[in-house]
Amino acid sequence: MAIIKKFRIKSFKNQNTIIEFKDVSLSYGNRLILDNINFKINEGQIFGMLGPNGVGKSTIFNLITGLVSPRNGKIIISGEEVSKYPIYLRTKKFKIGYVPQYGGYFNDLSLIDNLKAISEVVIDNENVRIERINYLLSKFELENLKDIKAKLLSGGQKKKLVIALSLLSEPKLLLLDECFAALDVLTIKMLQEIIVNLQQENNITICICDHQARDLLACVDVAMILSNGKVIAQDNPSNLVKNITAKNAYFGDNFKFN
Image: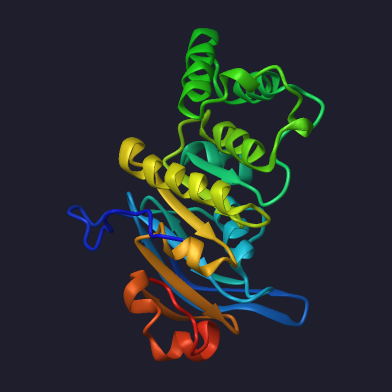
């Protein structure tokens, strides 16, 4: 697949950091998942996380949203340490949107009723709710599907719906968990274009974790590799695939990107 990102942000003028992990560790029982990891995500960046199954990519999302708490270390969002904030306050205060790998919608509700249901939770003003829903229907070309039950939509249409639901609250930070999994080539390309457009047109900071390395690297500015609880490499896609440590731990010798 051709790289669909026409440019990559190599440096940020304001260098504002929206997410920072400082010496964060987390264990499940006796199993160490994250071992004193450190990384930053800059405002306006598309940031990718790669690594084998069970390495802690989704766990990092759970730490950001507050679903789990670190054993030690600090998680800083927009300059503020967030351990005191529960899930509902954290996502609202710091405007975090989340797109899960599976589900994220009501099966038996129509597409439009899904949008209405979530909008009533995140938007107080009825006129603003209607305006936002109409905007998202148009943006994702969902008008003709609005009366179809969510469970009857195609995989790509469901993904569009879940992203639209996550954007109802106008997040500043969007987390995409395994967003390319089980999608066909054309749907993946469509999703890549959506991600890049969200950055360019809406100035949303986006963090993606996935196993589909080529698909992820095609649309991110920076990516990091996790292995054995550590961040072992971080760079722009072109440099990352040449990194010896990243090759040995994740990509292998035969991985081709361009």
